[in-house]
Length: 130
Image (cartoon, rainbow, N blue to C red):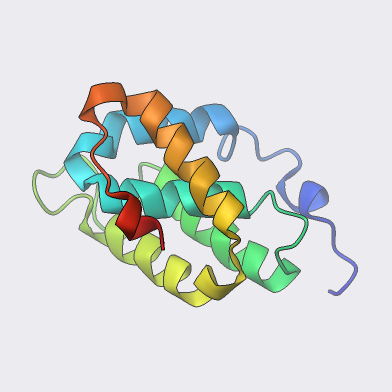
């Protein structure tokens, strides 16, 4: 397993996991989930692309982001109030597991992405980036 390549792992899975799918999910759920969760998801999204991130952590991140992006999970995302709770838990747990491996540049990249995506609706304190 030490010789797997990330690109090979997600090859052919574009219909499930892609930049466009992630952006669509962020736009659709961002204001419902809150900026803390959106920042966590975006941080994971950019962290998985980092060459400095270990392969084991990339697997954790891919699992969490895959769960986040797919509309069919333990609690259906369309259910009011509770539909996104499991997504929040999965994203938060994955971020907690890999956080120490994420660079400040990656955190800032996620911050800038959300600023661009949500514009004036983006309200996330710079203090929370630390």
